[in-house]
Length: 138
Ligand SMILES: Nc1nc2c([nH]c(=O)n2[C@H]2C[C@H](O)[C@@H](COP(=O)(O)OP(=O)(O)OP(=O)(O)O)O2)c(=O)[nH]1
Ligand SMILES: [Mg+2]
Image (cartoon, rainbow, N blue to C red):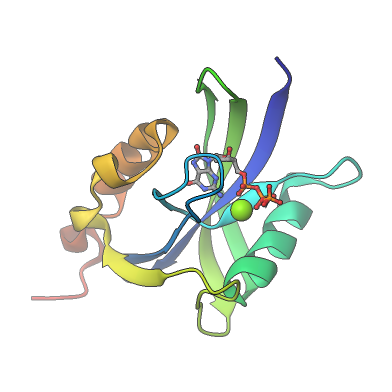
């Protein structure tokens, strides 16, 4: 089975990240996700990330840092997620494709609400971007 390359953006502001709900009729539908999508043939991962984050949540990506690469086999589909933390952006994210979206504290991300491949992402975020580490709140 062919592997699909996917650019995934962790939109980070203080200790929160913006997540969106995948439509029921899509692969892994009904799960929450970090915005992103397939890298097209003539595209770099960062170009795909910029394009997808504008299309899906209406922001302009200004600054990113790579977090990790995850390969996962869902049985019906194999994916390679190239995960970037979006540390700088312009605009306020919203569900530009009419999907639900919300800011959630990194500490409160529930792996059960996300596709299985996201477990490692959530673990890494909870290790590195906890509320206490960013020193924002008493
Ligand atoms: N965007 C995103 N995709 C994820 C995550 N976790 C995960 O397993 N995936 C999988 C689900 C899909 O099989 C694939 C991403 O495809 P996608 O449906 O977002 O692709 P796309 O935006 O180009 O959408 P489409 O044109 O196919 O509708 O990666 C995640 O956190 N974010
Ligand atoms: Mg997508």
